[in-house]
Length: 446
Image (cartoon, rainbow, N blue to C red; front, side, top):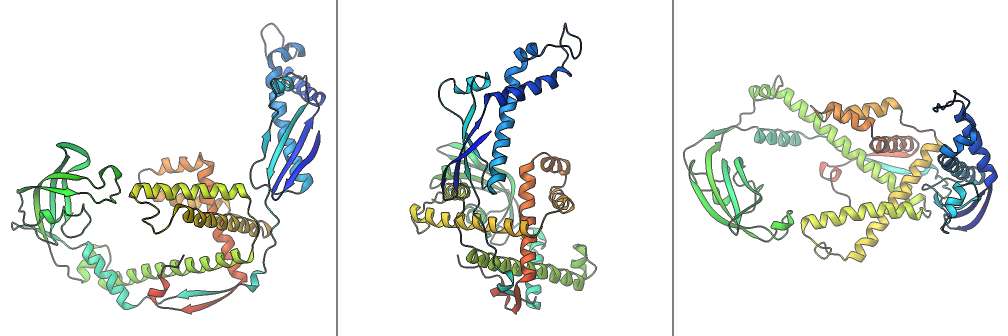
């Protein structure tokens, strides 16, 4: 096997590989000799099938297997001999001349091809002890607990049937049929749909047309769908709705006492407040962790400036851009609606893609250099968490991850990233900074 470097530019390498036909033939012969002792063919005793007969039957398939193995070995040899770290799978370019591949498979020509490789650049890791970060923290105030308690009370308040006409704040059960040009349309009808009048959760104007109706009364009205309505085929169009109110219910009062807490499965109002405080504390901790992680990633990005592999950047950009275009199309919006142009948006998201790829490589390098791994137990626990989130479909979710290596890898990636983040945070200089709740949850400027 002869390997010659033919091109090197940036992170791209190209090699010419030649495997003599004699070497391929020798390997084919070895495979046929091995096959001779195992194959059973009519008219021949076990182990007595002539090799020439086997070659006529299995020769081409054996040669194909030999060629595939030779390509794998050559690629591995290139990586090992040159100490390369691959960014993507090697691209094998076979000769395009007519009959060239057939001649190789027939044993009449050397296997000669080109391998195109894109590598990961050497990454010199920063001194993590020089990283300085602030960990923001905010105490859970009584007022925040009161607000959470009021929200739960709002969600659990009773509704009492009434004979009077519906008004804002009432819950109305309604059946309706929408038409356009006299024809029903997808999503335009519903039976016994509960609607909280004034909540603004339904098509704009629909809830207003229920005001003044009593149980058993009907009303027909026209409504225009907003120009930015998510269901694009309906955006900007006018529909006629025929609605019938089935029931009207007025909101009742909730008394915040031990009985209310017991209706939610807790012993007392004090226990309910404690549970809410614990949940809010977890929310605060998660927000604090997210901000600290973001600040750390910003510093890692700033301290590791190198050219990321172009193919990885292009793949990441295509994934991001596809999602952006899909969202805009679904919302019926344009880049101009977002206050930008397509060219500016492309530049912005390409920079984001480069950052993601660069940080991904830095995190991988930190993990490799410091033997950071995700154990099978940790991965199994993550899978079980996904299973628990899908009651009734546990076996289906379990089988999905067991039979889908890419899904398992997607589950492993954030676990690995968090372990690397924890490792670096242990070495970095992190100081705690008390802040208000508003500052803790304030969205970071892009």
